[in-house]
Amino acid sequence: MAAQYKRVLLKLSGEALCGPSGFGVDPSTVDLVAEQVVRAYELGVEMALVIGAGNIWRGGDAQARGMERATADYMGMLGTVINAMALQDALERMGVVTRVQTAIEMRDVAEPYIRRRAIRHLEKGRVVIFGAGTGNPFFTTDTAAALRAMEIGAEVLLKATKVDGVYDKDPLKFAGAQRFEQLSFLEALNMGVKVMDSTALSLCMDNNLPIMVFRLEPPDSLSRAIAGEPIGTLVSA
Image (cartoon, rainbow, N blue to C red):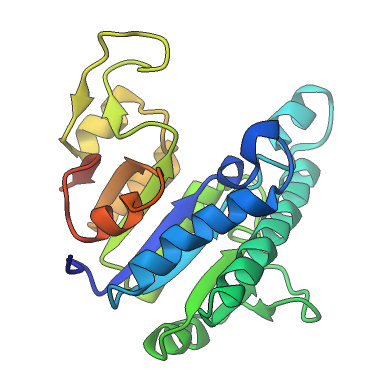
């Protein structure tokens, strides 16, 4: 198996780390995710990651109960750093040198985000995990992933989800849902696909950054996506 890309950014949901409980960080589940990253890394690809925080904090739920949106978003950013540190620990136990960079400075636990330093880490063969989103409220971690992918010069944004691509309707609810192998950015925006928000999609469209939507299923779905196998939906120009 050979990598089709030289440099990629993987977007993970926080739920990818929570295990069967549906909440928090489950160490054995984190190890399974880390094993997938290691397999892909061994193909020789330069890899960065962005992780959500839905396993720890859901800002939308807090906002619905009266919390100010900015406060809820900042709390979510802190949750992403917890997830980033958990994944860093798992990767380094498996022998992969990893750096966490955060958009909100917390120098005792991670580096501040510096674009040129992040690129240098990638060039030296280190995995880089970007935490704390963009550092700004009102932006999702999907948008942070799109932004960081473009800043580091990634060739593709890999969006790992619970389903194996983009469907015309929710495949978890409708047995006859149709999966698309390819979509244009405009088609995805017009469909209002739920796997990525419109801000992130528009940013990728404006900068011609393809998105591969696939299911993160052990042990090798990430490696197969990086090798260019059609295991999901490619959204591109």
